Length: 378
Image 1: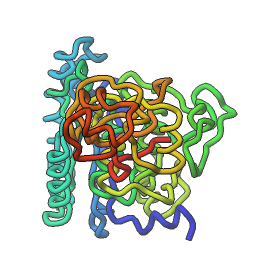
Image 2: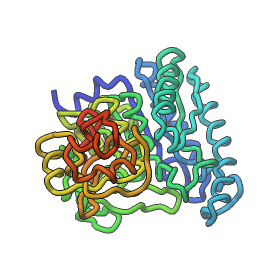
Image 3: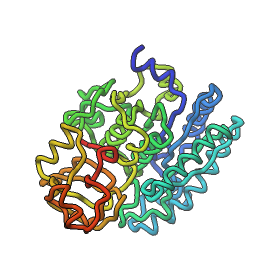
């Protein structure tokens, strides 16, 4: 069975609809295209598929309702515009899905919902209850009205959000529908010689060099964010396809195994659900700096992180918090759950495990981060 034919087996599908797909250049919703995309989703739903939509367009819809031609400069103004647009956007989705006898459910998420493990699991349970028990289509967006950009609590774009949702619910396939036909060897809007890359088996540095920038004033995500979304889902054992939302019957053709857009293949050794949260969903509370020997132990030998390999600590965190593990050049090597607070690690770093109880007066663990709670990013 070819990679494309494997997509016929996908039962749980996350579909991301980008701002440039859903809105016209004026900022108003493209109702005709949105109705057609909902029709395609309805066809998949009636075929027994579980569909979750991650939608952009709230700010764009708000701009259209207020007759504004560009995004406001300040965060409070953008949040106010999003609040107006989100209600309009959900009203349209509810109406269009109702026409096919399907219930749409609004879900608004923030970065904090992903950072907190309990809220993360609660969101997962809610989404699965919606698609399994109520046969509804969740319509998911970032809660722009409360997300605070200054505190780094935003997803940044819905490409990242859709990838995290796909991992959250254990999807089989993520469809990123944008204003581009896939990943090209160059920017097709500037280079006529640029050709479509039909299959990406691995996201290499060479693949990253061909990534372009966002081409519209309404969207926030460029090609690099789409590659990051691909990295997240393929590491979780999930297929991803990047294609144009304006391509005729794009959703139905992709799930039928047709050669549409660029397909990103999942890695063979995918992360388990708990490690997906460690690697991608949670936000590290601080950094643990390690020496070259520890880098080799973690990446090559798949060992735990011991105090002897730690040379520094940045930030303040507690036992059980998620931390970023970096080398001396500030390159992120891994992420994991710390067995000690930042203050305790500062006291025991560089020392053998046998010295822990002497320094701290107690020892619950030998490892700063155990390998079962560690995900290498290299």
